[in-house]
Image (tube, rainbow, N blue to C red):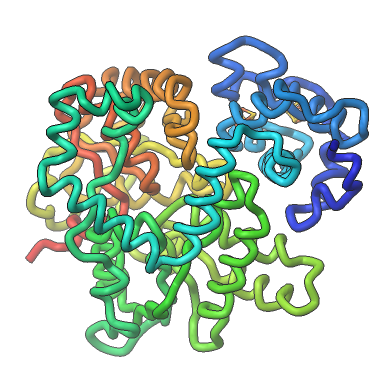
Length: 452
Ligand code: SF4
Ligand code: SF4
């Protein structure tokens, strides 16, 4: 079976026009220096240009889907740094996701991979109630000390070396989940300036409930009425990036039902991957007469929290530029004075949503901190959804590069806007014994505002 066997349907539901743009790739190679997998191997086949050639050959029926093809598609992080670099506007991310969809549909992966994806992507993550059951077991596993015991005694290593290696990357589950804690509508003090829908997410809800609560507090502080529709589902990005486009469409429809409401001015998110994918809903359903308009409406209202705050005029304190140096004025929040703060760009914020200026502007406007730029801030940390689980060794090489860059500037705090990056970088810092606090942008900004 090849991409050509299914004709143009190989790219249906992703973005058919992008297929034409693919054919127009100039093979200039400007994307190569930005590609983490090319940097690791130096091999053309592991570069964006090489993968585009492979995808084209398969789509044109010149090459069957081989093990090598599957390997290269899965080696790619889907970080989309190549999209940012490309002068021809090649939408590489859509292409690799379409190729993965074909690989999954044709059953070209190992039985174990197919089984894991089926259980995780097409069952567990399809319903938040199922994910919550799994999360409660994980919390029990942690608080009973079983996790610590298995790690310390090395028993897990005897059972599975891979499980033992990826174990430290698993998130700590929150005591209470944000979707259970938050009421459906929360009003600010005074007349609301905006009415915003808030996606609690899947991992954010069960493992970063505190970040979700901080985001809601920040929105209330900014004068927003926050609407948290009950019965939300995962946005679908995890499925779409791993060849489960049908499952992703199902999740998207569920969220469109919940968020396509006239009373919402915006839909605000705090996870880079979810925001990027919800902005794609319009594209995904572009040919669907039933869902197209509704999907486009939801996408057009979707904003990352930092994008929303800057667009609507939020500042913890006003920044002042003097001789090229940004100074801030105003009160300083407890625990932040004099701290050296830096920012890591999550790929799905900087490359997919093109959001990099807004979080920096917001951070620099916090009084009393010292902002320092992280070298290679937009270089992928190796988390990339489930990449650090399925390609652990490669992922750790990318993490090493990130941690080396952090070591160069020795910050007190690293701020970022995606749960996967938080878990990955935290792991890297812990491994190197570095005393650097990791914070979500929303948490940092809420702390900056909370000067009571
Ligand atoms: S994807 Fe873009 S940058 Fe990369 S080789 Fe093709 S045209 Fe050049
Ligand atoms: S998405 Fe990232 S890893 Fe994949 S080809 Fe582009 S730059 Fe390389």
